[in-house]
Length: 278
Ligand code: C2E
Ligand code: CA
Ligand code: CA
Ligand code: CA
Image 1 (cartoon, rainbow, N blue to C red):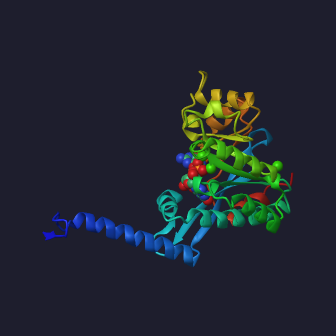
Image 2: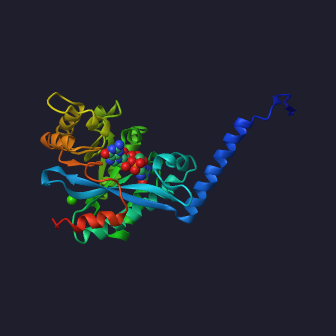
Image 3: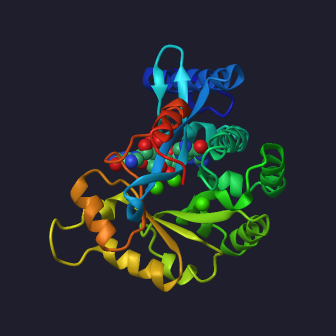
């Protein structure tokens, strides 16, 4: 054991050391990946249940194309990126890439919608509004076809500030979606405070729907959406039964493995090729 000036005994802890070392390497790797531009945007179709399940838009989902690990999902790097302060930069890139791609699809499908996720650090970034305005200008995407998704926890961290930022975004003409809706407890009282257009019904409620009859949380959430005049999108639809039931309940739009998994842009283009223009 070594003694420092304060007389506190400090022993070398191999486990702690290994952890710190692992973390240092992960940070280095992520910074390298960001420098090297190893990130990709994949897109998951959002379908219209009332129009026979045609694809009317997509949600942009970031992935890391790691040279050794292959395709890494956001759950494995977003938190570290957040801690390193890199999410506004990465998110800004995702936004621009997604809007550019949306314009490409809009050439054949006017009104095709692009959903992009925003994290708390992006919402808290004073440059966000200018950035969104600039991306819309550079790409030419009609503002009403861009939907910015944020979770309730993001929106409710600082309600007054969130309401201000969201109002400024809405002035640009973009739409706002509450993601994972229903998973936060304080949500109801804030639905009238926040300028929200769309609610994404969390997949836990979709998965918990009974096969036949019986009330469900999904149904209750849909009722709330209607009451507040919000457009619902059901998330995590994994089978035909859920899709049928959601359609009957008037969900309108849905997203999930039953329809399509997230895929590279080319996959969506091929899917749209098989779909006649609306
Ligand atoms: P999210 O916004 O709730 O996105 C939906 C997630 O559910 C995606 O996971 C998607 O692949 C997955 N999913 C879609 N359909 C199904 C289904 O039928 N069953 C199941 N079990 N899962 C389904 P993914 O792509 O791994 O993203 C995870 C989370 O990472 C996202 O959750 C979002 O919070 C965050 N994220 C992804 N991309 C971005 C981004 O560009 N910026 C920010 N800030 N966050 C992002
Ligand atoms: Ca549209
Ligand atoms: Ca989302
Ligand atoms: Ca979600």
